[in-house]
Image 1 (cartoon, rainbow over the protein chains, first blue to last red):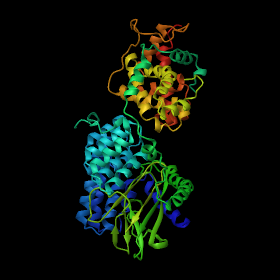
Image 2 (tube, rainbow over the protein chains, first blue to last red):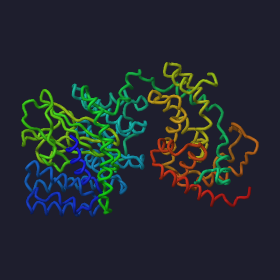
Image 3 (cartoon, rainbow over the protein chains, first blue to last red):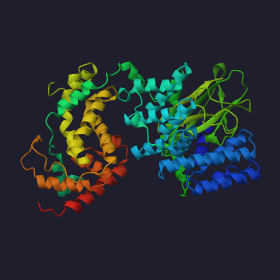
Image 4 (tube, each protein chain N blue to C red):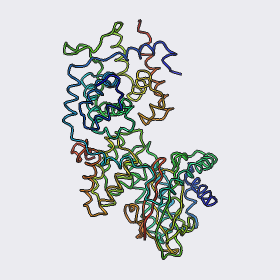
Length: 210
Length: 198
Length: 180
């Protein structure tokens, strides 16, 4: 396994380094037809000019290629992701890290309102919000209403609950849903059972609509 | 550097601020009244999961996952060196906050009838051949992948062409390409095991 | 409560159902909490509210206190967050305590306390950025080391050092020429 892990490490090093967008788009070579590649590069370039990181966009294009999608579908997907991440950037501010933006984009795409992202950033300007945002997105993906997901994560954060516990909370909710609980109800029960101080999601925890 | 011992003015400021502040009478009584009115606490068992270990795995994988975390620490050194060698400025955001917080994630799929299974995702450019999974006993397929903190989409590729979501992981939001996709989030320093059965 | 009973023992008594044992923790940590909140928020009444809020939250979440013998550090962490929340949405008042009437009980007015000097300091503190004020108070008044401050604030050591340095520089400018 050592050789294989070493190879992965090298590959990940390449992905993780603060490289120029050019080396990111070079990863597209040979993976799709030239017209699609050029269209993707154009989307990546303009997104990047707006502060959106290139890597997740390139990954999305590679995902499409790997899954055998046609060029138009790949470009549409990349453009949609760039828009999601751009909205996350607007909500989280220019200091947001790439992982935060990816998670924030997923949360927004899931239907979480930007006001939740703004509220999180306002309250926790110096903490990484990647996991809280990811948990919001994952809860919605399991059927939890977007506002309920946003409110519950905010409520837990206010009580000092952080990454590992947020993930554990999400897992408990997932387990309950898998066992037949309605998604919104599972959140309420777990929330009340987790932090009595926030028993139930209180109305004041809802951020103002933008 | 700025120790108050070095600077008499700062020391005098600190000393003045350390003196007790005025307080209205009955402060403690008010706090205790609020405490008594607080909702009753739940039994300890309800809190137990808040203290769960960070390796979130079901036996018998927990031990392997713990070993994987140790491997991650070793790997992080090599990775860090790689990153330093490649650091060359530029406006691109770094995908990984710090190499030192990388974790090894074990991906697991139970697919007894599969001939080959590989892992494809954001971490390997969705290359269907780069991360082959190893068949363990009883048709359990595994692969360990060192990942920096982040959120990654992925899927299992069964018999070279069939994309299969991870039954144990949250699904990715939206469905861009009409194939199942899962998502794994790696928090700072935490390891987790992704896996399910087919 | 016995004065020599460690925090951890009091925490355990509360968790076993003896709510009144919490009063011992309140008495023991009141002054430190109040001086931090008052310096941080610049308002006596608001400081008391923040501290009361922190105590109640601590009580409700007591089971999550991983090191009951260090209850004070944990409470301070909660209080720092309460002060951040309260401080975020409003302007800090420039004066505090001055002019308060007899309802105020001077918890102690030790010899050598100089109300005017304290007032100057409070005015100067009010002019620091909140993160700098927070870092300065934790470092120089509460005597925390940078590792503890990192755990408590989530900020990294170099950032905290920079905040403390900037706070000190600014306080020197603001207070350096006041004759003492």
